[in-house]
Length: 348
Image (cartoon, rainbow, N blue to C red; front, side, top):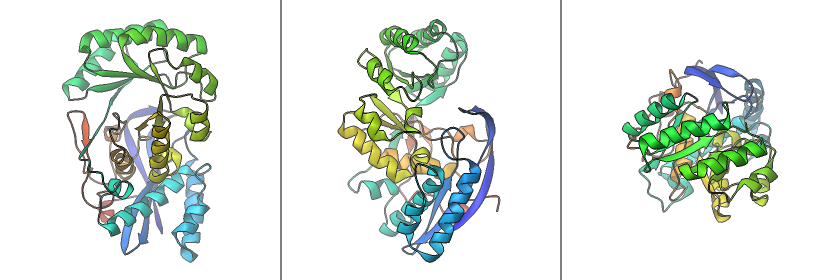
């Protein structure tokens, strides 16, 4: 097991739950297994995963275990609840090697009968005036996207509803609109917002209430706009969210959940209970983006996912083998993740 660090500049600053960041720093993990070298990525994100320092310590401890034990011992040493990004890096490298050894792309390692060439993806539009928001969505539609997610919650409900209405009037009824409030609303504000967004045919609002208010989210369901949970999955098990009937949609981030395998398992569990999975990144480098893409590709009839985030980075670790055309991302059909570990360049 080999661990190398990297730090990549963002194309524009990213506001997280704790701070605004201008770089994405993390680690590339390489692991030899079944005659193949697999590659994985651990890219912690403040407010979502462990810190970079804790991730490094987790990977160093895992490397010590790997020197004397097998991959099962390493996985057991990496707790998905405390060091999810570290576990994601090793788990991805292990899966990449396994899929290569089996001669299949990673999504077929999860679901052997699947054939998936493209995964639908959404465009994300930040906060802006009604005209600016509508212009941004119109550009996304012109670029081929038919699903757009609008950031809301920083303005009043009145102003956000006006923004969404302006977008809907501009692009018509054929474009799927989603909204992401990042937990900004009170229960009264959220109820008001969803009542007024329903006639505008908003598919769902992501995290309308604070992360710990599962009961409030459950009460919001069934009012014409779906409820999607994202931040609520950081500090609690998915089972507790499903048991609370708190969501129509789960936003699954493999980096936050401890690896692609965990994310795929949770996606299937959600489907079994009538909750739709949507797979997204945490603004990761190319290795982790590919891992998330393969998770999404392994889910039949998956809704548009938040995977088209490579442009948020000003530089990357390797050439991206995917393309986005007509609102869908191509899925590599070569073995494993679809990237050569030798092409992945780090700071080391």
